[in-house]
Length: 395
Ligand SMILES: CC(=O)N[C@H]1[C@@H](OP(=O)(O)OP(=O)(O)OC[C@H]2O[C@@H](n3ccc(=O)[nH]c3=O)[C@H](O)[C@@H]2O)O[C@H](CO)[C@@H](O)[C@@H]1O
Ligand SMILES: O=P([O-])([O-])O[C@@H]1[C@@H](O)[C@H](O)[C@@H](O)[C@H](O)[C@@H]1O
Image (cartoon, rainbow, N blue to C red; front, side):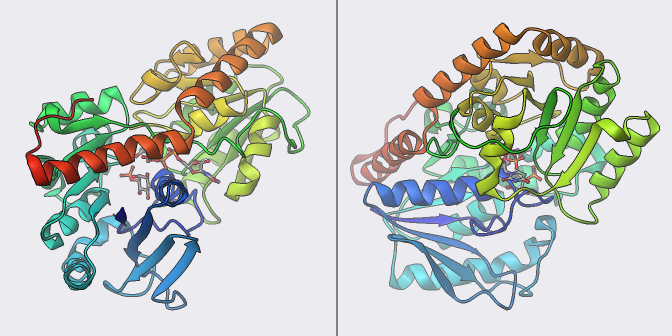
């Protein structure tokens, strides 16, 4: 198949860990490579955000990243992109008039809007990665999404040929928005099982038991809850990875650690390149990820694949990925988190059991080839649906 992926702000080649670059960037890169590995030809369309970016880059055999001129060739917060999306859409429409794909797969709401406007005669599949309704519920006034995001997501959900939800919880959210369940398919995010594996090099460890937190540096990831919990976990050290220099959230977390007198036990190490993440995870005794909400949570399955026990908040994708293979705690509850950490750090046998169960589940369910195969099955169904009438896809 000729597959075009549209990912307006999340460039598969960008460094991850910053406010606007994380799971979606990793997902789009990995899916593109896995689809190419299955013999498909993939083009990823993402916005040109630097003058040094060429028109297109060959990422691997069968995968091209196409930099779309839309607005200034400079980094912009994703919530400031709407004025430039008509230019992005025109670019797609012009390209697709000459070279249409068999299927377009849009990532994030703005890409979905552009793809549906520009596509002519081929199906569009949508993955939201994050939903405006959920974001607004948790972030309230701090949510900088454009006012029309939620309505636009509803329209996209109704018009797209299929919507990929990455977990059961997202299906509930999509149905509550009025998106017909029969056009929703559940395909989880994946993990690179060649790199994220229990055996392999380990990064240097901390002196005390090592708790790792890794992700984008935004308050909703709940790292402040982990710092607060650390007060009740004597001797343990917390390594916080992600973000970049000058990050507001990193400064806030450092200040919080200092206010609790935990400077010696909290290490904010900044963004970690992809290639170094597995070794860092393997060095940890426990990975903690307690966001307020989480559409899927790739960090969780990455740590599981490394055989590292996971303590995660009981939200979103964690309900599918971690349940039974890790420890779930309520979000924003430092005491409950501290109890879970004390139990796990104090029981080597349980850590080994949970770590092994997680590694098994990651291997069985979340390898990218398997995720790409399921994604490809959805593409085949919508392409077929165009020809002979799409009945139902189910989850
Ligand atoms: C709030 C929200 O919308 N979260 C979703 C978002 O990803 P979000 O970026 O929030 O979080 P994820 O944990 O899924 O992904 C973060 C990724 O960045 C990597 N990383 C992070 C820091 C760093 O320094 N180096 C590094 O490589 C992690 O290893 C991981 O692969 O889209 C993902 C893909 O749909 C979903 O799984 C998340 O649920
Ligand atoms: O949570 P949120 O800030 O709306 O949106 C996020 C994006 O900014 C980021 O680029 C992407 O990698 C994440 O997957 C997520 O979608």
